[in-house]
Amino acid sequence: MIKYTFLLIFTLFVGRMTAQELNCQVSIITTPALQVGPVEKETFKELEQAIYDFMNTTKWTNDIFEIEERINCNILITITDIPATTTYSGKIQIQSTRPVFNTSYNSTVFNHVDGDFSINYLRNSAILPMSNYQYRDNLSAILSFYAYMILGYDYDSFSPKGGDQHFKAAQQIANNAKNSGDQGWSASAGKKRNRFWLVDNVLQPVFSPLRDAYYSYHRVGMDQMYADQGMARKTILSALQGLDKVQRSRPGNMNLQLFLVSKTDELINIFSQSEMKEKNAAVSILKKLDPSNSSRYQEILN
Image (cartoon, rainbow, N blue to C red; front, side, top):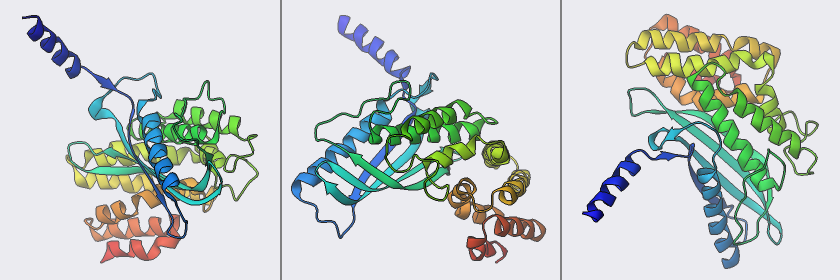
């Protein structure tokens, strides 16, 4: 009887279990030109597991997430150089998606490749969570920064500017890391396309229409496709047209390009089903926002 009582209690407990916020898959690969020995291969396997554990077991917010509510995301790290023992450099790609209401489809929310990836990692080492966003090492700083960026964009997609606190957390990490000497954190480095500017732009008033677009596009647009596709497409088109102000104020900025890169195929599919007047309007604004992909958007008219 005691055994069955325990099983019942355990079943009820499991049924009510909550989870951390992220469901993050991690892969580490190397470039073909990089000569990797057996020690490095084992190190990368351990690093892959350490990153997986860090992203999926760290409690990033005070909110309660059910297991099925976790944010699906992927991290792909490409190692291109091993300049010294325990030092690895290359690039990191971060992608996150959100489900579209009443469908089995997942829409890409964030997709970014960061070329300023250089870390130190000692085998059998755990990655420790940051304390009050204080810089400890570049690996934990980069991972924590992108965890909060994923959260910020996801929350923005469900409520107007809902990701504020998470973007501010990412900004605090960037501010604390900028004097570390590691690449990617400095406000003066590059052409305003590093981690510092990625989050700084988000919180600037000039980018407010882009923040609004994440909500309108996903919650008022994509999530309503099941009920009224025509109205949903109009909402998405209106959200895109609202981005013209951002493009004119900050032409070629990385944040707007990140949004469009993650949505190109999706937008072509959405507006290919429109009437000709709406197709023309969509192609017109998309070519203005993203001229480098003009030929792709032309597919909408076919």
